[in-house]
Image 1 (cartoon, rainbow, N blue to C red):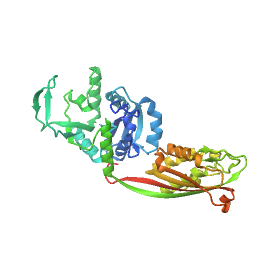
Image 2 (image 1 turned 90 degrees about the vertical axis):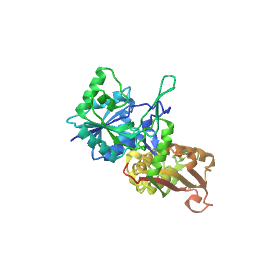
Image 3 (image 1 turned 45 degrees about the vertical axis):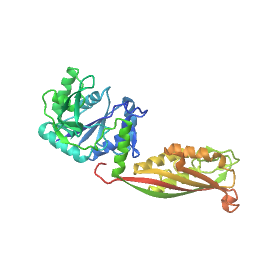
Length: 396
């Protein structure tokens, strides 16, 4: 039986009051949407994924999310609608070929598990429709418009509805057609089936399967993520040196420094950034800068090393590593680097999207000794500490 997952992620996150839509907020270094899609990617019960996105995010998410993280089941991406129900409708219209079951899950419920998906799918195969949820734990009061209590509602049969929700495809398609024919908008997909007399089985979910809607939800999500993640630190060492040359710019840390000579190299010869790149790659066990950006490749001729730094960031993040802090020492006699250190730090921190306090850059002379002491060139030493995050559960 073919089962298609629909992930509506077309919202703007108005209730969160953030300039970034909630599905793209970072949770443990990854967008919330990525955490959700990874679970459905791993689920053996899901064959294909259809994703609804804000229209202006269609291209960027394909490149920065789907391709970057190997989410091969997400074969179809459609533009979302004005409301969540509209986004699901667009996804249903994009289902191709034979389809037996449809599973719908909120993009901003990143703590869904493969086991919960399996239980909801199994129930829907029998009953036609099923929804995850948790039984109400608090006492429920019904009030009038004046907020005065009218009654206390017995809670033993009350559920707080979650997703995933699963349906036989034809059943859900008919329910959506009826809803739009009658201009009805429900609060969830199951309500569209219920109003046509369909029976929906509730499946015990989890209180951890939260929907990120407010800033407080993000705090809870951070706490839940840390509970499931084992964090380890790894260090990497980097070294680079370049000789001085005429008719070259002296660029270090992305700063062009006034001087009579520059550094010789295939790229812009920013030895500071090259050493930092090697330190980062070393910490992640990802080779060295020469392997990724060989000096025989014309693509990197005179390229800004800040671009290479950004590429290295993506390389290590794809392996599950994130920068914790950097420390670098530039060894040269002249010119003095102290006036430019703050800008170098700002440049590096900006590209790596880390705090400036996590980047330390200092300069030393070599007291007239060696090639640096004779002012023949520059040497740089760098150490990078990266964080490796691994889940100890089945969630991701």
